[in-house]
Image 1 (cartoon, rainbow, N blue to C red):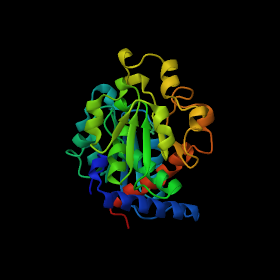
Image 2 (cartoon, protein in one colour):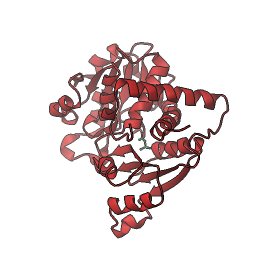
Image 3 (cartoon, rainbow, N blue to C red):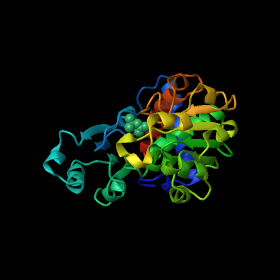
Image 4 (tube, rainbow, N blue to C red):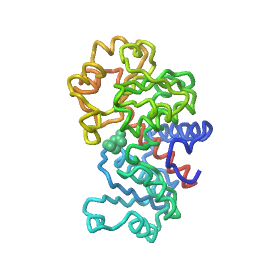
Length: 305
Ligand code: CP
């Protein structure tokens, strides 16, 4: 594939190749191989129109570990504030010889538009409420490395599904790889038409306590208050009582089950601090795995040697 705009771009074979390549990248890092020459002479542009900590830093680290030249573009402080369009910004980057453009944008579909304007590969680093495919890949990688498989794994994705690009990409990727996904949350944050559109293979539940005992993975989502309208969200306390993962709920999960969160977290709302920091939590591991997974994506898209 040339671009990674959606988890739907990946069939099971390609997704597994990315996860296997990421495992090789992680093994090399574990053997103290700090830098690989694979992308020497290639240029990766990180084009961030929306804030990011994990994704931006890990794409930069991944490209540098592959010896690529990296240009970091942040809309803040650029000519975007003077009204320059995404297309003109893209054409400027094209003129600088970008081999890959990693884009985060608040508009769903921005990576698809960008791919029409640049010759290089486009990687979606999160577009609006639409998708975040490399987050889904690093989540799948983390599940596979902790639990040994993806096929048949029971994964609960909990919370603000409506606004979550992480949920959408995870549902697409995990079902492609044979996992059984249940999305859980209040009805206002999982309209049934949205759930149906996510995947025919996905189940829906409004009852977290009923789902926990039969889950191998519980992935908590950030409540995206910045995208929320009042009618969607009664109160933080009520949400936390019904859908927050606290210590008593952690004890309802099977002993082998893991807790995930893509970050950033609202500690005390969707997840209790004691749960986020517990040995069952893979939150820090997910961030570390993100570098290996993004190395694999850049390496495979750019035909690294
Ligand atoms: N998980 C994630 O996308 O985090 P950032 O917004 O910090 O990149």
